[in-house]
Length: 353
Ligand code: NAD
Image: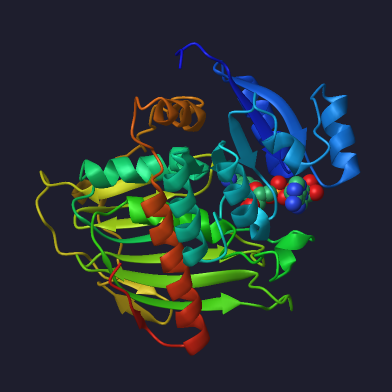
């Protein structure tokens, strides 16, 4: 295959995320967006109004020999069926997250991809998020010493968006939605296996699926993590709160506001003075003195634009390893299953993952 070939890509499911992929792919030199297919007519009309070719059926996409890549951006419950069909038709596949509803469904897809010798990659795009990469950088560079606890949250107040995300049959709920992103990031932040999982799901809005969740995950190396998604939070908690043996880091939001406060190893250690706190005095909770700490800005990472799509092409051409490995995605799905189990049984689940 010549390396200057334009890969022909078709988007299946031209809703919110399908349209977003369409915009992004227009910027990728090596990929040509050659068409769109959606089961809903007005989505097809929208695609045509933007100048895209539309296919009349999924079969028409799959029988078009010029199509190299199929990108699946439909609701979650059809990811498996559509991915397998596309792989069997000899197409490479990009699939939106969550890859499937269960980990065993992913095993089937991986088996078909192997049999057909096609590339299958899941769009875990939040591995390119700046806030996450800042945390990864400070862990790797030990900026606040050894990180022993981290909290990763996303909070909104709009409830579950009012469509298929509210329905169990479509793979709705926040654990399978935002949860997938936050757990995928978490598992990239440590080499350690997990050991225990506790969790609770929120259903305060009365939907049949979770409108948020909170999970506490312990790793074998002692790291603990609190991962939380909420759609009933009129006041947000910070996006990241990270504790290390020498300091604490906070990232408040996607605007990357935040800071690092760490111990100043050059300062003379002083006993804290008691402060008035409510109806009493405390030394324990007195803030550290200005001299004994350093305040550092967050170090912003350099991000290669279009990294996901470029890596996908490199993987097709055998020029790179997948940046998102299916085994990693499988591990996230297993973790999600353990979180559901811990929440349902109201117990701590042992998980050697
Ligand atoms: P959406 O409802 O806006 O769009 C889904 C589209 O798929 C709709 O137009 C619908 O008509 C179409 N569709 C449904 N079944 C189909 C089928 N069998 N064949 C063809 N088209 C079909 O949903 P969305 O928000 O765009 O989410 C789509 C997928 O993208 C979900 O899996 C979601 O989790 C994922 N997503 C990922 C991110 C991310 O950051 N990676 C962000 C949002 C959504």
